[in-house]
Amino acid sequence: MKKKRTISIFLNRHILPIVEQIRAKHDPLYGKIPPHITLVFPFKNEMTTEQCQHHMSRILKDFNPFQITLEDTVVAEDGCLFWLVKDGKEIIQQLNLKLYSGPFKEYRSTTHQYIPHITIGRFNDLEKAKAVQNEIAQLINEPVTLTVDRITLETIGENEASIVEYVHVM
Image (cartoon, rainbow, N blue to C red; front, side, top):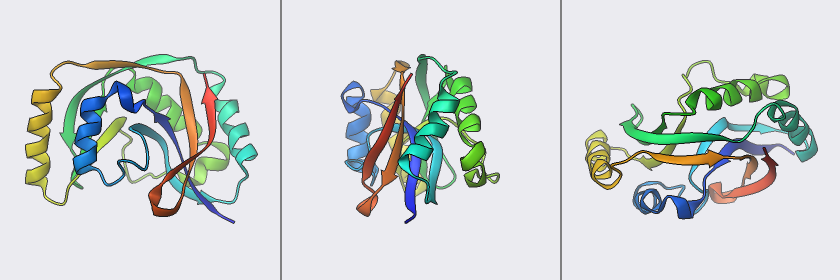
């Protein structure tokens, strides 16, 4: 049976209370998945957890814990409000590229440029998205630095709920 999966950097909800307040109002995935940076976007396959784990471990063995800094926000063309990774984005881009190798190669989109970010809102109205972006600028007026030390493989279950299958600790 095919499972819908993704690979992400999960961030602790308690470290980012302001972001969680914003997500609670503006992100339909709030409560279903913690704040996260997607490394491999949702895909469906029949691989076992062990096969996915093997691929992840083979790739991630060369990476150590690292710090990221979240700074600016941007409204994407599709109405998503992103909090961008500034420092550490090169490492995240490497992780993204390397994880899309081997058995995951066929799932890589060539139509989108990968930009490391946390989605903090989804809007049908770009003006509303920009208004919330301005509110956030007042709330988050300093960069936030976090340590990344684990990568998570999840299954996307019913109702888009996150079910953790495997956590690779760096």
